[in-house]
Image (tube, rainbow, N blue to C red):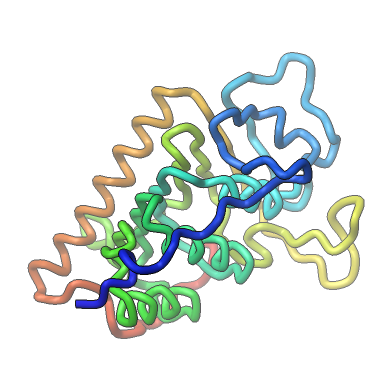
Length: 236
């Protein structure tokens, strides 16, 4: 059995502009304020929940900010998974044995290049050796696995209607805000929350969905979804 996880040194922590490690241990929702269209929250904004809008706020930047700071654990279930930059960050997390990772993806979306990259990585170096557990499956009733969110380091939750794609997130092509040639944005919302009860409940649900999908493969004799079924229309 390959010993990659034992012989490779873990990736170095990302550093901020001051040379300090970037983590979520001191995360505050105010950290994301500059990524909103208005550059500030209202005076009565919640301290543990905020709602962001695709096409208005920099949702891609928000997701990137959170994922870049994962250092302990990532529990994730994503229906639409088609973002090169976010995938690169996730792959770095996946190969860090100091981070516990559970990834669940939807069976109907399994033909995408990023899902294939995870499958290829699992075949080359079994991801379980890196403390990563990955499965493609369906809901408990064999419907699409439509959850779109994650819990990072047991401290920050992110959930909404956003698929990880150009139009799903809305790609900012100017320095000052949305718009410009080629700008695309669906009507989607992205929440980020730090309320401990919501974070705990969502993480528990993500674990449950992962185990259900894993059991589907156990009963059929296949650990992961190897074939690429027809993809459903993005955004359903």
